[in-house]
Image 1: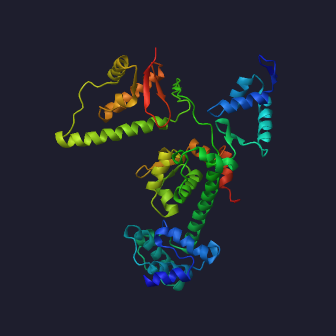
Image 2: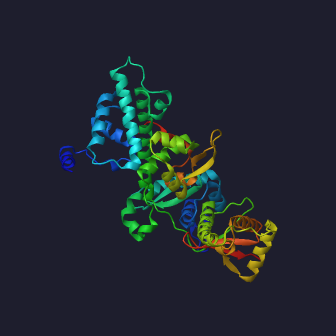
Image 3: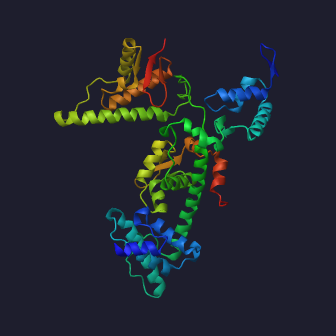
Length: 179
Length: 258
């Protein structure tokens, strides 16, 4: 417990919530531990409490966990209304079917060449790959040895954040034939 | 035109070829219409339906027709094998390589693989929709980009600088293209070196307390741009200058540090 000038005591949970509210970047566990001056186990416990509390209907936020740390976001159910606060160009344009299929192939088989992608889909991949590179969802990871030394592609951390995939384990689960 | 209209009225699944990105899309469409498992498709039936489909179109879009025709040839080849299993292959070696597949097993395997990725893509689409509904705190007031010794741009992708560089180069190319047309090949002046670039940047910064990234890069040709950019990064790394961007829509400022 900590006290401020007015003598009111606040819990670690409260401090973490305040930090998450303020921060413009995801906050990793160790950073939160540093701010609060408590062991990581206590931090983890508080985060669980926050997550459970946010699940209530009256709360409009969610606790996100990414590879970079924890972050507050708005509850998806509020989107229909709160998105009116933004202009059209500030909102992400959804990806095309071709882009999604290409991303699925790259995510599953990375590193993979353009030709391998084209062989699976049966159509040229140039335009889609350029677009995905521009969006920062894929990157060039190197070159394949052999004839022509073609470029190899893989997904990026931005890809993980974009689809809300926490880590490589979650990505693997996505690839399982469980539907 | 008349036959098209009739097809539209009779067949609720009728769509134009342009709706299909490639021949596999069309094939999937026909298989799903049959509502059979990929492994159980009747090759003969699918081939006939595929060809009927191509024939029903008033004209084939010529730049995409190639792949659709290769698919037709591949299906016909497989159908011929079924009808005449004893007959020797009428294709020469390289010709079979040009087809999408040489056997029904290959076709089924290919369709199953593609279908798997389609289902993953569908899962990704759901996640995308969900994620697009979650909003995060937007970046606040302008902040200084601190470059620590590992050259790690806190809060920004290297992609941002990359994009800035690409934009500059694009404008450069347009300018150069005009000049080159008039004067012929441009020679790189002698005596350009990394050290000279560093000194150049230092002297520019003395004059203007804040300049923009483009100011340092716009008037050089490609090799000089790369050297200057590298020099900028080196100086930032050493803490001699800072790079600062208000948000993604603004230009990148270069400021001298004391």
